[in-house]
Amino acid sequence: MYHRASDAAKQVRASGDKNWKKDVTFEHVRPLSKMYQMFLDERETLTLERAAFIIGEYPPILITMQEELRMAKLGFKTEGTPEQRYREIPISGFSLHSDGASHELG
Image (tube, rainbow, N blue to C red; front, side, top):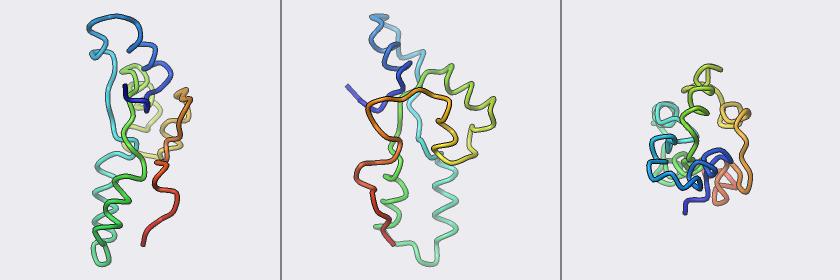
């Protein structure tokens, strides 16, 4: 089982409902549009290692559709830092930040 899930998504998954997947979404903690913008901003100096770091720094997470809608209503559909975007979503057992991305490659 994928461990990077919000507390509510874990409950939905464990509910026994055979259609539980309709109630959750697997999403990038840092939106793809933000990653693409980072690539463009750094295009003069972007290395393969830096690109891999940007992609892997915040691995995807499983959240409920309700949590995603609440995040969007707060203005965090694509805006804000990962920490700002997920502040209102209870998450336990892991960090939004990748364990393997503890230092920035440049």
